[in-house]
Each structure stands twice: as structure tokens, then as C-alpha cells.
Image (cartoon, rainbow over all chains, first blue to last red; front, top):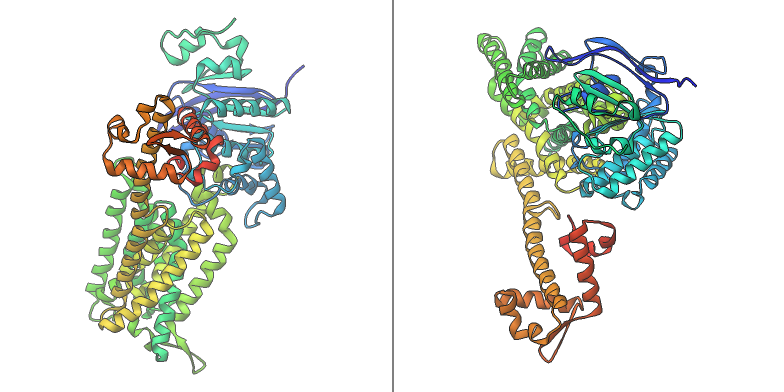
Length: 245
Length: 386
């Protein structure tokens, strides 16, 4: 059984001030995987996601989502940026932030209405944040803020989800809640790509992994390629991770 | 109140609202300083436009000034992107250069043109009613009023149309980009509107007051509300209030209108800064005091919970046991009594069931940091309000 390719990245090179942070990346993400992108700080993990989503302009290479350019496939894709990338003192409520997930399908000028609000409330319910819907976002804990971000992605009802470190600074309960939702997404046939830091949890949470350090080191099923050899190649030190065999 | 006085206040109010709208987004985008930069660097645009048209109220002037405003932002970003200097330094480098080009241009042609630096910096609202607009010979009001009125209408229409886009790209640029709302377009759109508003207000209130009107009302509103729409509305109201009260202050003091309005803006911010209900200085100090008391209360309750023996719980011994001063002990004791958390029998203090439950929950919360169980306690106690 040959899986469909959800995301295809060809010869992608991205540079900041002429210094390549991603170098000639070829990557194929099959449909329906729950994939971790791992690599040391500065390996270009977030950059890879941002380049796939057209937030950063690559200096070379191309990206396609289900065989077409990202620009025409926006509605297939949802994005959860790093929690630290926004100002949580912004004057708005949890519900309003989740509603932002509907803006993409609305397009320019059109405003969200009852239908969008209903979808947002459902997404809040799914992440267990419904009681906090009218809470100002600065009054939420780090874990709750991350759940709001996840709800905002869920409301986009996409086929592919990109998440930039969703487990950063969240409590254990939230981490479990989030990973359960991600696993549900995969069960529903969605593709989920997560920038991840905690190597210990990779085998438990994910079924697919990409090792990245400016260049792509390896990509494939966790059970085949998540080993000391690839970890050492990626992190540059003699890496030993204890995996339950 | 004469009609000239009314017109001045109307112009000032329109300027205030037109400034408050882009100002709100500039403040939220932490770009307040860029309004200062724009207000100065559009000078060469105004001067060139004036040379061409010989009319301070020509639409060409507004267009050229808007272009210079956007050029300012482009230059700032370009310098910043080199990574050699930070954004504030880049702003500080760009706008004086552009402004001084304007100053030199005025000075070189000072004999021919009626345009002086004072008017540019401080404006002259008092003279605004004298420059009137005639349509086929009929006087339809001061020119400034029509200019700023048109700018205000354009701003309001754009705000209404692109409110969602402005909010999204201000809050989360990355998501905006990924959803196809180009943050660059919105950014430069906002810059253009800020520039146009600035130049429209320039003639009436001058460069310095424009900055004050763009920044002070939103900064004050920011301390008072947690809702973007309310923040916009409140900013506009604050702006209008300061514009009108500033006018009467100037009237009373026989001083510059622009200066008086700016003074009112400063006073307004000071008042809000001190007295804002949750973010104001006094509220914060009060809350800290409350929190200290409540931590003391918890310590006290925990002591009672941990000690069954009466000697530990005797009123006279509490002072030395918990090592507090009399006043503090009394505050804490009163607070606990008021909340029915303790009862005192024969000078021996003991926890009521309610106090016992509260202590358990509170300690649980502090240890686990789980929010769910203390939701209802948050109303009564500052301590749990994060």
C-alpha cells in the first residue's frame, strides 16, 4: 500500500542574511503520519515549517502540498506558531483568538458570523477550554494558552497541521491532552508535523520522524530510523537515547 | 461659544479620532516611535508638495507626505535588516535626516513661501477657521475640517473593512501570513494611513501633537480594557475629551491650543496610570498588600491545621509562634473571622470546616498549580489571580 504524499519539499534552501539555515532539503511527508522534526537549536526546524507555509521566502527550491503550490492549498493547512511568538497581553479573549482560525476560509473583508463562532466554540470544547472562552488571554496559564492555539488550528479543519513546539512550557496534563488530540487527528487521516524538543518522548508520541540540522539527516518511521546513529549525526555528539526496544 | 470656537473644537475632535485609530494599532504593534518618525520625516514631502501647488491643503501634499512616510518605514526596516543596529536606532537615524532635508528646503526658499518651522511643529489651530473652503462662491466651512473629515471617513471605512485583518496581523503575524493575509500589505497600509492622518492633522495641530494624539489615548485605553473594539472606542473618546478640554484650557490660559491639548493628554494618561482598576499603580500596590495579607492568612490557617494541641492555638501564643507583629496578627485574625474560617473559644483558635477545606484546597493549588479547583475562590482572594 503506497501512501499519498501530503507535503513534498524539493531542494529547499533558506538563508538569513546570506547564511543558509536550511540547505538543500528534500523531504516527503506521507499522508496520515504524526511526524516529529527534531534537531539541535538553530537547526532550522521552525524555519522549515515557515518556509513550507510561505511565511519565509526560500532562495531556492519548491514546496508542494498534495501536488500543488501552497498558495492554492492554504485551506488544507493549519499552523500553530510558537507560543512565544505572540504578545499575550493583546486585548482579546480566548474565543476571539480561536475565531482567528476561521479567517482563512473567510478571506479578505468578510467577517466571522454565527457559523464561525459555533465552530470556534466546538474547538474550545475539544481542548477543554470552553469554560475559559471569555477569559482575557493574558489571564491564561501557559498550558491553557497552548490549548487555545491548538483549538485555533482545529477550527481551520485542515488536512495537514504544522505545529511549532506545542509542548514548550506546558504542564504535564496539557502535554497529554495535546498529544491525545494529535493522535486523534492522525486517526482521522490527518497529517501532523510537530517541531519537537524532547527526544525521550519521540517514540511514544510519534510514528514518523525527521532529523534536521541545516541539512536533512534522515526521515522515516520512528521504529526504523530513531536510533543512536542518526541522533549522533544530528546532534554532533555521541548520543545515546534509551528507547524501549 | 462662537462658530469659530465650535469649528476649532470640531477640527480638533476629528483629528483626535483620526489619530486614535491608527494609533491603537501602532501601540499594540509596539511601534509607537514610528509615529514620531513619520510626523517629522513627512516634512520634505509637504515642502515639495507646497512648492508645486503653493497650497498647504492640496491633496498632492497629502499624497507626497504619505509617500515620504512610507519611505521612512522602508528605510528604517532596511537599516534594521542589516543587523548592524536595532530598530529604535534605525528610527533615530532616518527621521532627523528626512526632517532636516525639509528644514533646509524651507530655509532656502523662506523668502518665497509662507511655511515656517513653528507652524509645522506646533500647528496653529486657532487660525484654522480663517482658511475657508468655497464651493461656487458658497462658504462650506474651514478647509482643515474638510480635509481631516475626509481622512477620518477613509480611516473609518478602512477600519471597518479590514478590522479582522488588522487584528490578526497585529496579534499573530505568522498565522496571518500562513492564512494568506500578507502582513506586509497590512503593515504598509497602516503606515500609509498613519502618514496621511499625520499630514492631515499637521496643519491643524503640528507634528508634536499628532504624536501625542496617536499614542496617549491608546496607551491610556490599553490600561483600562481587554477588548480591542473597546480600546479603539475608548481611545477615540479620550482623544476627543482631551481635544475639547484642551481647547478650553488654552482659552482660559490664553495659551497655545496644541500645547494645552497635549498637556491634557499627559494628565489623562497620568490619571489612568495611577487609577486604572486592575493595571493602575494604585491597584497594583493594593493588590500586593492584599496578597501579602492573604499569604499570611494561609500561613496562619496552615499552622492551625498542623497543630491540634491547644497551647499552639492560644490567641496569646499566636504572636510569638508565627512571629508576627500585633497589627498584622490582628488583620489576619479579622480576615479569617470575617470569612468564617476560624472560631475562637476560650482564647483558643480553631479551624471551622470551611476554613479547613479552604486550607486544603489552597495548599493543593500551590503544590499542583492546577487551576480548575480554585476557580470559585479566585473571586474572593487576590492570591489566586495569577
